Image 1 (cartoon, rainbow, N blue to C red):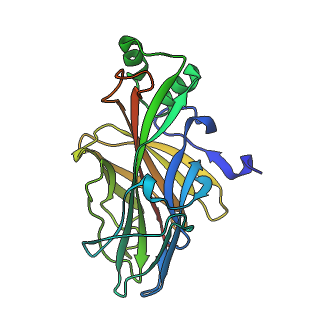
Image 2 (image 1 turned 90 degrees about the horizontal axis):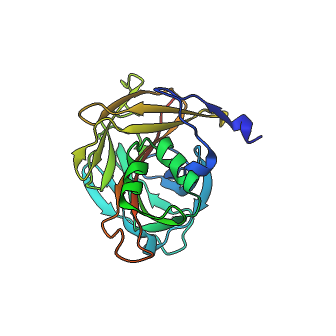
Amino acid sequence: MYLSRLFLLVTLGAVPLSPALSHEFWIEPHDYQVDNGGTVVGDFKNGQEFVGNTLSFFDKSTECYAMVADGVRTPLKPRAGDRPALNIPAPIDDGLLVVVHETTPQYVTYTDWDKFVKFTKHKDFTDAVALHEQRGWSKEKLRERYTRHVKALIAVGSGAGADQAVGMATEFTALTNPYDPGFDGTMQVSLTYDGAPRADAQVEVFDRAPDDSVTITLHRTDTEGLAEIPVTPGHAYLFDAVTLREAADAGETENAPVWETLWAALTFEVPR
């Protein structure tokens, strides 16, 4: 049954997509389109191939959590342990509601060097292994610090409006609105890191069809950090892009992380 849910299509080169190599995090609304004054409900999800576990909200793992509507940013303050993590009144006015969540750092320890090497290949970090060896870091046990930087696009009423950059460390910004009646089927996004465009970066796209099958494709940003990705009515999408960098405190202590990953994610649905 699990295999029947996954149909794998990789563009721009073949890349292994073993389940052990990825651990995406995203916001998954129960409904991507809600009525004015209704309720916006959604889950924090952690998993792979657009299928995952539902997580609760916790202050200690949250750097920021907010919604942006009509250019106004409003902090969201669920109670610790709330699940669903997103449960708020929808604005009364029509508009594009953007839910933003940025996490505090978490850690993972690799004890299998080959798994780390496969991860760097999957996420297209071509120089990581050479740098790791050049630094003389351990291959027996290596720590990684990681953070999540996610958005969800939700239509309230007509869903009219536009996404905007909110200043996360890495971030997708939608340049087209999939809920706009004039949407032409091509999702245009900007990918940034530290406020600057991420040129020639890999964008992994998870496309969930109405029958829950998931197709995965790989795309790249251009020299200005922009990507144009064809999407299909009635399908939900998760865009994912990862930044890998040397940890600033690498080598300071025995247990210090040597790598940091920053995960940008964007979820939305294209109306039928």
